[in-house]
Length: 321
Ligand code: NCD
Image (tube, rainbow, N blue to C red; front, side, top):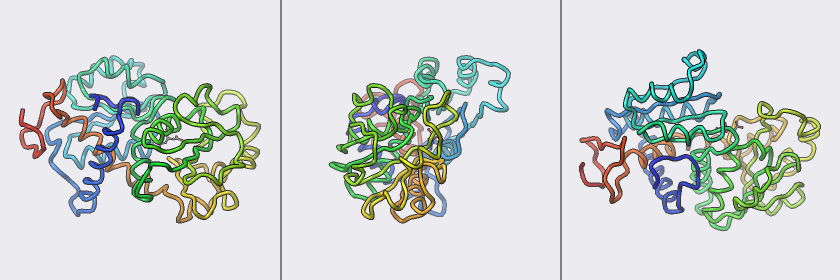
């Protein structure tokens, strides 16, 4: 596994399998009354969020805490970023605390990749503009596999604002890598050019939605839209909303949140037993624990890389440093 997690492309299928297995083992910890293991005791995880987030930021923070790391969580609002400090200066400042990992969310494509060049810490991309959101894709795989038992051969339809969605990009790569057949479906104005190259088919109507085992819906990201890409949300909903009429009884429903109720999803499907939306949120913690664990306690074979000193009390499978 790479030292950083910037893109799903950093992960081979075996790496993904390992993260999912590790997450399973942390699910047991989450069931205990005291939900903590000492794995990252004495190490520091910095969460740096330059964009709003509820699920991703809270689950990264909980994940680091449940591994006993010290955490520093910074939101752009209220930090020196407000005062015009550059990303590079911010990273250099935070590097003074010698963090083992920096988790970053930014509105800019490529921000996590840049951060990885400026710090010896392991860098985890928690969403860079409309580029990628790899831990979301991993938690989606984990959630789906828990429900279905297998991912191989499943037909996954990703429906919604694909153009602005880092979740879609990471999702196509991840589902395809795990053997799913991926279809993206949205109005022609909301499809990024060349997305087929990531490993999916493209449709512009829901006519064949019946072939999907899983319907993965996306939010209309109005904050990233400049101009009128869809005539109106009402018109979008009329053609693409997943509702009780369109979702078949055997199909599973996913959404990364936050949901725009009444736009991409109707209330009755959000609250149906076919929806995995609450499980996706719950999985966020154990999957992010697994990612932190795999990156920070690396060393399968090779010695610990920069920023990856092994904690002395770590009961791991590898040799002590
Ligand atoms: C997504 C994001 O921020 O990329 N949400 C999330 O991380 N759970 C999707 C979205 O904002 O629509």
